[in-house]
Length: 263
Image (tube, rainbow, N blue to C red):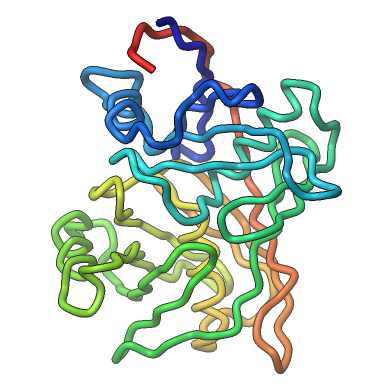
């Protein structure tokens, strides 16, 4: 069978996207998702997303996300932003959106080519020695360093992701170097991809919150540089934690195509 697909990227975090409003694509076909995301034998992507008909009142669409290994996963920030751009391309939305993902409801806006996605509130931040751990829709381990460029992200990230504490559920691992006040460089090891990716939306969101929680960031707007480009995170901090968290950056359609596969 011939499958129509679209390829999007947000600061180098790339995704295969499929319009699944007719429910023709099986969400249980792990091997197919893995094949489509394979960079040698398939299309190649960090993950795959399905845009589906909304189930909740007020929503414009539903987001279903798979890691490159073929398994459904937790929230993907850059993926969510790309899916919003795809929904606009399809004519489902104009410049504002509301949708539901695995971690709950999200709002989004598109302004001047940038997609802003509202992330879930963060109430709990765990101290792990000198490092931090928090959940921004996906679990993230944050380690601040002064030698980011020379760091072996895949080796050191895997060591944390597969250690005794995190091995079963897994965690994403972010290595961070502060460039200036409220400005950071980030490199991320992603579970499910099991390698470094060019960018991670929930990861940079976690870094911004961790920088604030550890008194490194002074304001409520943080600029983040990834290997794939620049993102920004804004938030509000109060006695209950962090809310009104918005992730902003570009989301671009790379190409559309068709591929022969067994659905």
